[in-house]
Length: 303
Picture 1 (cartoon, rainbow, N blue to C red):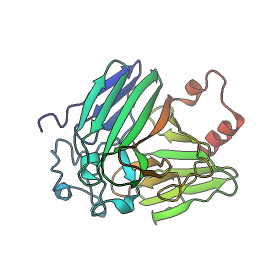
Picture 2: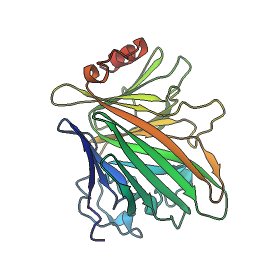
Picture 3: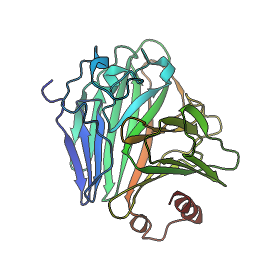
């Protein structure tokens, strides 16, 4: 389609969000003070996706059976429900409709996926010159109940260090690959370093709903903080944990991946999951003195 690569923007001062509705309704980039934070795959730039032949697109990661476009997107968990080991094509690579946009917000929605019978909606709102929020929504348009988990995936330029508060009983679970030397658990904190081409994926418990990401920058490091709902003891997750990190061995990116609780989604029913992001330097993000001792300790572990 002719407008596949047409982008939309929201901006306040030094913060700009760029969206690519034509390919999976993606948040295509986050730019802050002139720095680009999200990975975009130059191998695929300008390609028009044929949803029936996505495997024919060029890739440096043939072990994955789907195109690695880049940006940020909403996947559907569990991945065991995917077809041919690839996310549902209509939701990940198909066009989304921009149903609303003004100076501070944009709302995009997919078509109804012919395989999963799900429709994904993504709403972004700028909150301030250094923060925004996103609501991921999924509705079941099928005739039967479907086990569904909302799975936001953020593809970040390397180098990145990802940290979260856990506790002494939390474990980091290997999913695949070799994470040797990249995962540290110190007291109540887990730190995952994505600073080299070493393919691995790990999962862990995000008990507080807060994730810190340190992004290498030409001058001072930038910090991205994501706040999402704290899990409840009764919550179940499609992959057994509510936060995952993937680091590519083929491209210069890593992924921070969140999981909303798994739901038995009834016909016609909708679920949603909210995230709030803040971006800036440490001194800028906590200039009001709101930083806690635990946050100071986590930042120290990540530096």
